[in-house]
Amino acid sequence: MKKLLLIYLVALAPFVSKAQAHYDIVLINGRVVDGTGNPWFKADVGISKGKIVKIGQIDTTKAKKVINVNNRIVAPGFIDIHTHIEGDEEKTPTADNFIYDGVTSVITGNCGSSEVDLEKYFNFLTKLKTSVNIGALIGQGSVRAHVMNTSSAPPTTEQQMAMEELVEKAMKDGAMGLSTGLIYVPGIYSSTEEIVGLAKVAKKYGGIYATHMRSETAQVFEAINEAITIGKLADIPVQISHLKVGRPNWNRSLETLKMIDSARAMGLDVTCDQYPYSASSTSLRSLIPTWALTQNDSTFQKRITDPPMKKKIVDEMLSDAARRGNTDFSYAVIAFCNADTTLNGKSISQVNKLKGRPQTLEAEINTILELVNEGWVQMVFHGMNEGDIETIMKYPFTIVASDGSIREFGKGMPHPRSYGTNARVLGKYVREKELIKLEDAIKRMTSAPAQRFNLKNKGLIRPGMDADIVVFDDKNIDDLSTYDSPHAYSTGVEYVLVNGNITLKEGKHTGVRNGQILYGPGKK
Image (tube, rainbow, N blue to C red; front, side):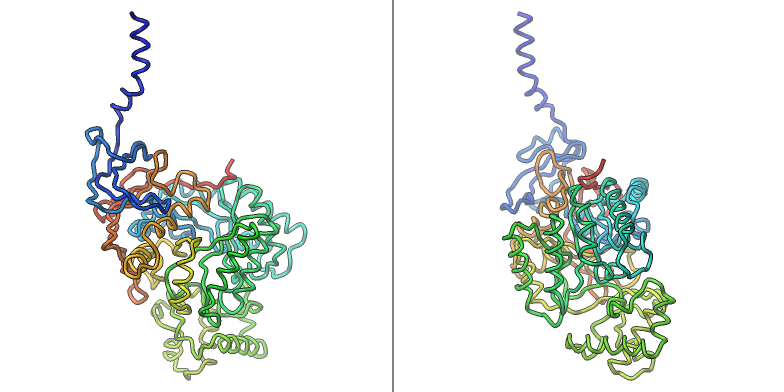
């Protein structure tokens, strides 16, 4: 009899355990958009110890906390694969602008700029504790500067080996892959061959190649071809960062997408990401001819004070403006001028006028050179059109990414993408324009970026996945940040959970900092 009783109890054990299942949080009455692209369905979501443990009808008597989401959308937390947070995470570790926009994970180190010692950086983040999960790429530009300083020369064999060793160490420390910024010093000096050598190292450890290409305007097609070539020669997945088409190639975005399709048809793993705005944001230095740039401020100063050299620079900038069809620089607006913050929010044309100079293209170019010589100037460039934005957004392999950073509320005139990228897609392009479906948009914000960057436990509402979850009102989600008034949080996001902890509650940040480090596949 005792033996039979023991057998009975052993057989019953799984059912007893199930009946006693415990949930830290249960979200009830939600419309679950699980991140796969499949239609939403009604279900409860049970969370325990930072993980999603059940989806379906749940006995809420077994839950510590029950949240009735009242038919709101329950989706995986948004994953922003293209950010630049270095230096800003310590100022605002709660990452409010991302949390209010539904973002639970970010990847930094993009556009060739990163911390070179990622082990040290990750240790810093672990001690700091942020509200979002953070992963990083290793920046080729930063690696090159570390080894070669400001040199524009090709690397020697020894220098190439030294750079490859730094990339290898970064990959072992947990980098997601290699990034380039080929319009910036020193990335502009790098040959395709040099980059391929570094990309092969990243590939060895399961990494990705993410590139801010050499051109997004006049030479955009040549730039895409180079990115694809690097992917082919290094046998590495390629992510074309913030794909756009500036003048003089407006309305040719479909041609750029066909290049990606052709590469994929040949078996090359190429995709792209996009922010949903008609303006870009980068340094004012990006308007200066490549050959004239240098990381050494005194060298640049000598170049622009030498009359023949300055004339050559000005003439090339005049020619470039003509090629793009620009008659002035009113499209270029200062986001933050380190030397004179009173200029924040003013266009180059307005600054030129304030200086009492003639309203000519050449005078405005002289104003640009003067501003660059005085220090760092972050810009917002209004250089794209809506048709190309929509064409790229409809492309099925486009991932939503902000190209933003953690913002100190009220400081400077940053691009609104740091505040409202996801809400803008969901409000303007899903709800209002019906350009893409809700489920498709969420896939591009969740499982697609998670798959792209090997985030094994992110991006899906599924048992066993990390409980990174966003709850939002699809009827009212909106981006409020504008170019003129950028410091405004998105509305409509009601709850955000990061690794099972409530970080946004009823539309208010709780102050919780439960983000974790996201390590790449090469982490030892």
